[in-house]
Structure formats: C-alpha cells, structure tokens
Image (cartoon, rainbow, N blue to C red; front, side):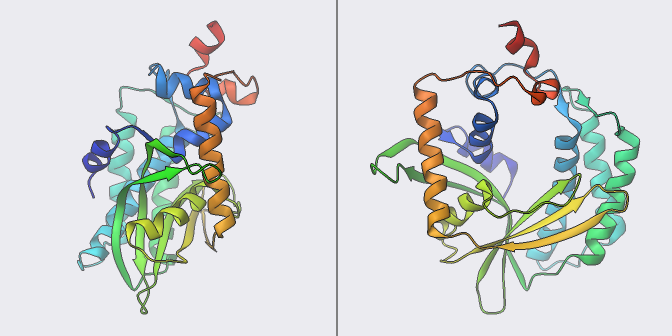
Length: 267
C-alpha cells in the first residue's frame, strides 16, 4: 500500500477512527480540523515521533512481506532518523513538551528501533503493510447505512502457520498502558472479516515506550461482538452529533497543547 492509495479513499465521504477520537476528546477541535480545515498552529512532538517510528516499522514489515533479507538494526535506525529529519523539516512546526527536544528524541528513537529489532517476534508471514480499507458502516440499532464510509489503514497484517490472520498495531508512548476496550482495536476487529481476513482476528499491540530505558510491550487483545457493536454505537452517536452541529468546546488541560486553541479561544 502507498499513502496515495489511502489519500484516494479519503476523497470519498468518510469517517475515521482518528476523527471519532477527536470528536470524543473535543467537539470544537473536530470542527476546526475536519470541517473548517483550520490550519494547525503546530504538531505535537509525540505525533511527529510516532509517525517516524511507524515509517521505520513499515519498512521492516514491508521487507518481510516481499521475502527480502531482513533489514539490519542499523538500517532500521537510519530509516527512523531520515523520517525524523523530514518531520522536523515540515512546514508545520513541531511543539515539544518541557522534557523533550529534537536531538534527544532522535537518540531515543534510534535506541527504540534497535530494541524493536532485537526483541520483536517475527511473524510467520506478512500479508499487508499500511493496508488501506474502506467499508460500509451502519447504526446497529436502526440499521441505517451511512453515506460516510469507515476509512483507514492497518499498520501490518500477519498470518500464522495455520493461516490465521492477526493485526499488528504499532504504538509509542511515555509509559506502559493496556488496550482492553481500545476503540481502534474494536474497529479493526469489525473491519477484519469485511476485508477478507476471516473471523476472530485478534489485534497484537506492539508498544514502544519512551521510558528512561526504552521497552517493548506486546499485548494480544481479542474483541467481542459486543465490543464491535459498541464501536458502531459510538460511530452512530458521533455522526448524529456532527449532523446536529454539536461542536461545543471542552476547556481542560488539553487546550494547552491543542493546535486549534488560538482560533477556538478567540471565538
């Protein structure tokens, strides 16, 4: 998959897990980002860092998918470093918190990619990397089929020796956390059989933490039919609120780092 393929899918009327999460976090931020297309004042350092890590891991799994020799730890680190340089050169400035800086995060990312290379389990077979999807979604209560399709991309898809598919989701964070009830995982569980991956597809979260000593935490999560239904109910609720024009602000600690805080507070 190329990023351009996902860009094509995003040209149709759609909703995404990211958009849903944004609305749940702050409806006003959703309006600025997805409807008004307000230029962001900055991009959070954590988002830029996560994007660079994802670029490196995408290369790692792409080589495996195409049965190429596995990239070395040094090559993986170099891919991250190059991606980080591009993030820093973006026209949207990157905003770091008080404990971060571009150089220290570059060093941290190099250590994390080396750690991933040393400790990450190698899948039996990789069948997709940054795999795009566009599926129909409906209200689970009324059966209404929405004009908006659910669009996104799965980090990687692997198969075991028995042909069972597994979704691999890459995460970075300041500390270890659990993923039970994760909205994105529930969405992927719903998507999986509808893009030909079969039933009972679990999600393997690979969390790289930016702790003093970086660590790789792996958690396998299965999502139930009830989880998938709750996801659809969340989609239904968000779309209903958007159509009703409910774009109220949530004034809390998140405003400090919000890229839309300026125009939002001014309004």
